[in-house]
Amino acid sequence: AQKVTQAQTEISVVEKEDVTLDCVYETRDTTYYLFWYKQPPSGELVFLIRRNSFDEQNEISGRYSWNFQKSTSSFNFTITASQVVDSAVYFCVTNAGGTSYGKLTFGQGTILTVHP
Amino acid sequence: GAVVSQHPSWVICKSGTSVKIECRSLDFQATTMFWYRQFPKQSLMLMATSNEGSKATYEQGVEKDKFLINHASLTLSTLTVTSAHPEDSSFYICSARKSSGGAETQYFGPGTRLLVL
Image 1 (cartoon, rainbow over the protein chains, first blue to last red):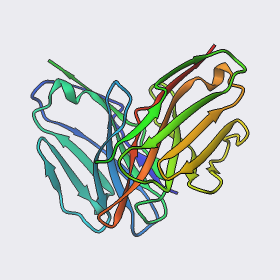
Image 2 (image 1 turned 120 degrees about the vertical axis):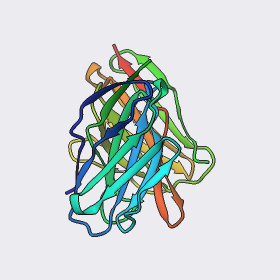
Image 3 (image 1 turned 60 degrees about the vertical axis):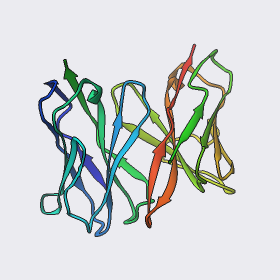
């Protein structure tokens, strides 16, 4: 069975600080997918990134960057120069069945609060 | 794009009534949609997988007769909470699976907040 652990329940930072959200996953599948979703106070989940297990290349998208380390089963997410609009719950997610269309397994979420 | 809508966004109803929630993929077709439930300050819990043209697959512990799912078309799935009770009050979220670049991603609707009095 898959499991995702987000050890940080809540993080509070001041605007412009960098912040890293940790994610550790467990799976027996050799092929799997990892995702990050953002859930702002409005409640709607916003897709941020999808990464497959064969692609360990780190990715940067604007102020967002992701560090995938297969050796440590981690898929950490860094926000550079955080902004108040980044305040949200962030979920690290993996899927079941070795394909990108399996059922999703969610971490418990990290509540990020960015203060002005 | 990948836009998923849900209707209604808010429902307040009396105990014993049934509530229908619609989930639509607006700019893509989705043979598979998913229904989740989320309690305050908790993660999402998968309730069922909705398959177009066939019966839904329910997760263990989810009552099929309580939560009726119908996936009538490639862009619409509905969840009906039958004979709702206060303990059914929750945030219900649907997602639709979209194929892109050889892989698939679930895109989520904005959610429906249900309050049963």
